[in-house]
Amino acid sequence: MFFRRKRPANPTFAERLDGLKKSGLTVSPIAGGGVRVSRENCAIDLEEENGAVRGAGRAGVAMGDEIGALVDGGFQKFFRTASGHRKPATADDLAALHEFEEDLKEGLGEESYYNDSLGTVSTYYLYDRVKDRDRGVPKRAWE
Image (cartoon, rainbow, N blue to C red; front, top):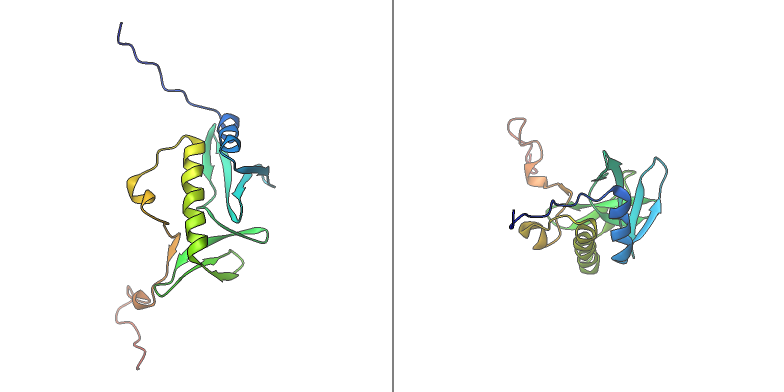
């Protein structure tokens, strides 16, 4: 009885959003019942699922009204929106996105894992060498 531990608190969705606001992030409602959390040019859409926070995707760079997901093309990283707009990723964009993701996890009270803390993680990986890899012999460029 003497060494009784406190039960871990499970904050509500509103309490987690207040934690994000205290972290210096901007929280604004979007159509569909979710919220968009942003800072400078980085953003993510969050939704409530049974009182917990669920991301509608990974964090990315705001490009107009859409959020560009980080794509690793093998030769270069770039941001791509759902409508197909592309923008090359600069070192400043990647550093800002990495800091945004870390502050987002801290504001939501989530754990930050070692492999994610090493650097920015891409949403998609599109390497031209593995194209058609699973469909037999790929077409070679010289053929």
